[in-house]
View (cartoon, rainbow, N blue to C red):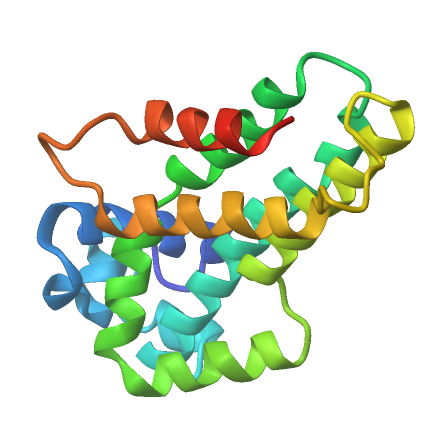
Length: 195
């Protein structure tokens, strides 16, 4: 535990990481201010120095993690013309599948105040699944410009991006132990969508 009055480097990220460990271990019911600060090895009041309350903390955690994911996927258009289209799309989808999304979504749903803050932030343009979908569409349009995908008006980059993002979101939220590998399932969908 950090001594009183000593600044903690990277405290927000430390608290976010602690919250994710608690969620993985105990689910949304185990997340309390005291549990988070204890897991992070911080004084009990540290969370309230950086966040208005637990709802603000949860909202900021969800928005922060979505922002990280969106930034990773937003780099995808720069990969146009490299690798294979299937592999590039699958890598983006796997980035989402590897996220703590289900636990964070479950947490946000248990806290109406946090959910409202997240919705408000998304309406103001903070990154969410819409950002991921837009990056996928940008990538597919870039591949159309390279000639690796058809410029045919019958093949829609935004529709394929929506299908990949929506399928990935569905698999992220519904896959559990013993289910078929979601990575293989998303590859199957991508293969079916590509010309």
